[in-house]
Length: 99
Image 1 (cartoon, rainbow, N blue to C red):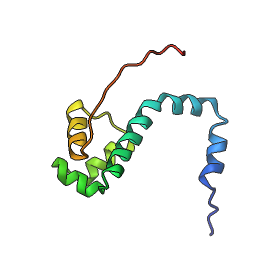
Image 2 (cartoon, rainbow, N blue to C red):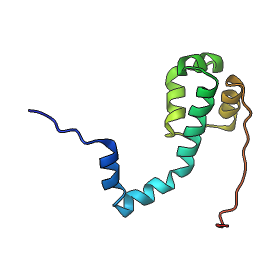
Image 3 (tube, helix red, strand yellow):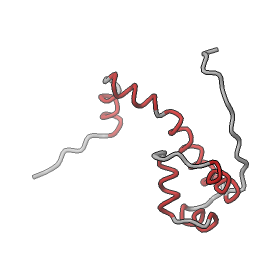
Image 4 (cartoon, rainbow, N blue to C red):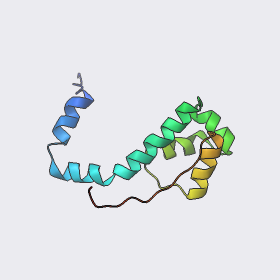
């Protein structure tokens, strides 16, 4: 039996036709943004997940979970991440009103 593989961009086009998928995707915007920022900070620091984990005193699995966007890390964890990647943590509040 052979499997047919569908390219991710083709699958995504189909998924985004579903209003429920779009709503769920949009609801995760903040998690995606945080995950992207964490990955960028680690990449800019030229560190592997394992190197970052050692610098933070944790495991590679924890770093992978942080970068997956599936969890909501504490401010203390984000501070340790920033310290280990030689970056500065900045948190801001933005108006929900469209400008």
